[in-house]
Every structure is written in C-alpha cells, then in structure tokens.
Length: 246
View 1 (cartoon, rainbow, N blue to C red):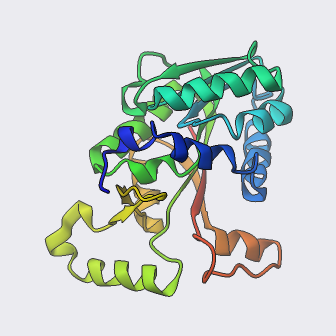
View 2 (cartoon, rainbow, N blue to C red):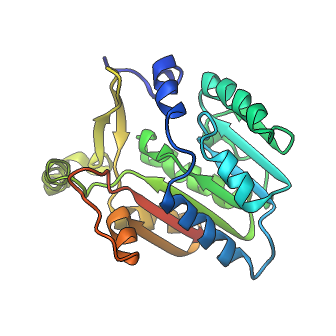
C-alpha cells in the first residue's frame, strides 16, 4: 500500500518498529565523539537541535553523552512526538527536552542558537524533493551557532548487489531522471513510501551548498574499516554518515 510520508509515520505499527530500535548505534556514538572533539575548540556542547526525533530513540543517549542544558527535538508526526514525550518522562529527561511537531524544512525562525544539530534516523531519506532537502540543510546551518556542528545519516545508493545495480542503472539514465535519480520505494509492515538514496558526492555537494565546511562523510563500510572490521554489505544498509561544521 503506497502512502504519503507524514501519514506513514503516524501509523501505530510503524511507530512500534521505531520503539524496538536500540538506543544509539556504535556509529552514532562515533559521530557524537567527533562532534564533541570538533566543538571543543569553542566550548562544550550545551544546546542541541534534533530533527526527525521519532519516538526519541537517540535522545536518552545524547543527553547522557553531552549533558546539555537544552534539547529541542522535532518530528513531522504528532503520534511519534506523543510517544516521544512518554519516553522522555520515563527516562526523566523531559525537563531538559522540549518537543515540537513541525516539518524540518519549516524550522527556520531561530538563528545561531545550537551548538549541535542532528539529522539522524536517515530522516532525509524520506524527503524526496531535492529543494526540501537543501532547505533542511540551510535551516540546520542557520540555527547552528558559529562553529556549530551538524551530524546525520542518510541511505546510500551503494550497498547490497541489487540495490547498487538498481541505482547504477538509474544513474546511466540520469539525463532522464534528473534530480530523481536517487528515488526508490521504501517502507515496511506492508506500507510503501517514496524515498531518496544519496550518492556520497551528491551528499557532500548538498551539505556544502548550504554553507557548512570541514565535511566528513563515511559509508558504514568505510566506518567499520576504520575499526579494522569488515562490514557485510549483503546484510546491512551501508548508510552514509556525515559530520560538518559551520
């Protein structure tokens, strides 16, 4: 069943899948450490903006890791935010965290406020229009303090054999597909939603075009190679992770 992005994230059993995800993955901790290291020349990370928080999976780890004075977490789904608020109370971090129901491309009313901005959970995968993705990166740049850090994840065009082949074929016809060359149907639990998968260089260009500098991007395969570990692309999504500075 094909469904629109916002409607997809309002569905109970989609929310349940998010609830079953572990708090923070090893590669996310890596990004937290990198963000702290990069920003340490300025000071401690005390104000954090989280885009696409869902049920709040990563918020508890972020709060424990950074001990911030303020977290603003937002999501496009009101049902996700409702569950997130329940979790924040359960984790006893609701006093430091404020939640909002808002589309990330519309969050642009503040400026130079946050030490760290996160776009985790491959949120941008579900933003299929290129201009909307650019607007979200521009919003992240606007709301970050000078020297603030941006971290995030997106789905990658390179991974399993079938996925990689699918996108290689589409890239051969990029003259026809244009900016939709990375589009692919995704979703789960019987629901299908349109998604967008990035090439590494296109992700770099989109982040850079919004003003960020010192951009680092790794596929999960490359990340695990840094640890002298082998990543099995037959089983994993091989997502791209990124770290950038304003």
